[in-house]
Image (cartoon, rainbow, N blue to C red):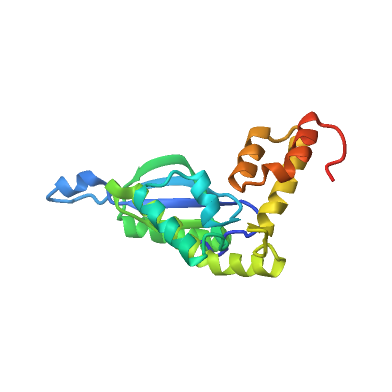
Length: 219
């Protein structure tokens, strides 16, 4: 695993080295030559967002079972409880075949990462036909190990507090988006979707239209 956790207030890019035993070696009864498949890529973790189940229900398509779960959260009064949402994207870079045992390849990469002090690089021993699942397992473990630190950072910063059913983190994100729209650095549709998902468009609509026109103070 990388020695550095996911950042709480910004994006994190992790370089991964996925090492697997090629599928075709299972058909080689003699196995005279050991080979390994090395896939390199980058996983980008966007800045973690503080959200609520209500917010997610308006932004993500849910099936009937998930809707039942949401109704149960509402019944319990937990639909506006704050939680942390992590989103990722994967950028494959290269793939090569190496004449060596996968365990040996992984060990060499691990030693190189340590010697170069790369805190955001990882080596993963995976399964060739399920290499993408192996990558998802790595992301899951990285998220789990980073979650407690991220949550503590959010609590200390006050971003986990709620303001009329909306996390302070979301309101700060909206403020930043308003400035970006006014400066022409953000598609207004992105901000509009965020406001609608939080059911805040009526509250922010005057400032939204001023930002859209690029004139007047946002306060």
